[in-house]
Image (cartoon, rainbow, N blue to C red; front, side):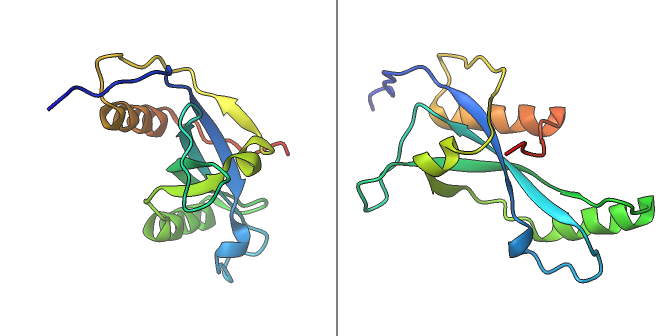
Length: 136
């Protein structure tokens, strides 16, 4: 088996999207739900169409719940943890690039495969709480 060949350096970035419309949270009025994703901007995927997409790997799903007590925040956190989608998703490059994209301060090990690098990036993000509410 031949070793994997990379022609571009990895370019890890973060993007957060509001996903409130996809959640049914009747017990939490005013709650806004966000998911922060990590993606390698050097990799474009074509999913049976001409327009390229990024593979977005979920890092953290969290909520903004203004005027709530700590108990309500904990209950909402439990709901999100139970139902958050752990699988990667694909989104058109132009949609992602219109969002509030932030660089990730990460230097990849050139000896890592793409899968190993992705695993380490996600672990780093989850351990360091990189989620943010987008400004756009």
